[in-house]
Image (cartoon, rainbow, N blue to C red; front, side, top):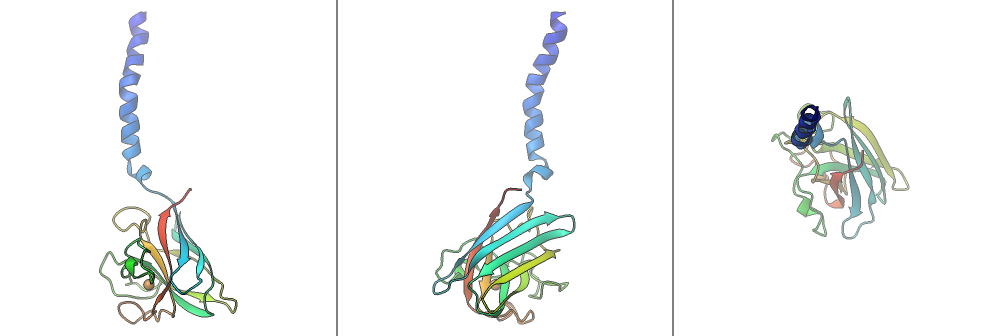
Length: 180
Ligand SMILES: [Cu+2]
């Protein structure tokens, strides 16, 4: 009688920690489904806002709400390094481009992973952006976590190499994991 109850208890004590460890290392638990970048102005600018990245069945939904822009289009990219320490934002490096592709627009077949196109600010300098992207990932080798979102002073022409001629950087924000 005693043995039959003790053995299962001992077994669960030994096996449970092993199961928990294996489970937490499983691929579905190492990923994340939401990320956020809080955009801060570079020196001499007043551009601020929030960019969120949400994993959906169809891709990663990118939503941005930005203020303080000049009216019109502004290049909007993910850059390689999550380093906004330089006053002009250049510490974020070039476009995030893990596959060595040419620069292009967001719907181009060949583009940098970080090529999100343009924000389009209204007369008040506000811009909203909402589209589902098929090149971005929140996990693995191509993960955008820990990289930076950059907003530029000028429009991205979507063709000039390697940056679309978007000019100086007016805001920078590091992409971090967010609550699901
Ligand atoms: Cu850029």
